Image 1: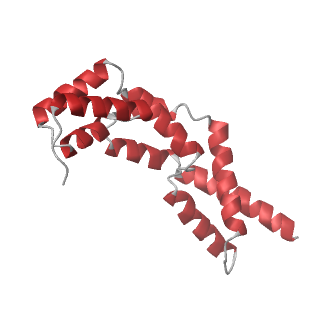
Image 2: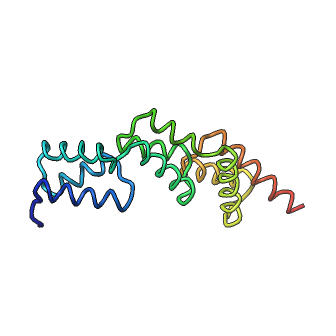
Image 3: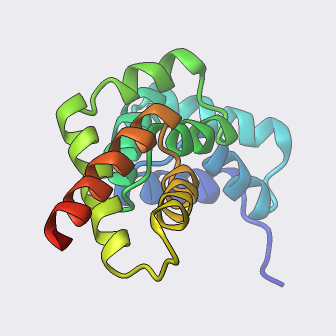
Length: 162
């Protein structure tokens, strides 16, 4: 196993890590502890990184929300849960989730379910709806949004079969 880092070296390494991509306090705390830094020094390093704006929970949450929404195509429920796991406060999570435009969000779930339906094997319309429901919920979208998107997806497919 690697050697333990001293305070200055760990601080410099953590600052470099934060410069590469947004990090939250809990991620950096885990990193510092994995490098063998003691809890007191770890806390001191975290406070320094926050003061110098290397760590900013609001900025991290906004980037995380946009990244997971745009690239991973996650719903707000899954994003929110992931941020809670990282120790981000509910107020910061709420504020970050508000950066997702409602129209983009609805379009995303509609497109996701339509694409899923095209590749889906199903016995009947009820089977298709059940599979789409499970898929939408597993992506972290809200119940109402999933149900509405299912109706859109299924309506388009049944119209095209007529």
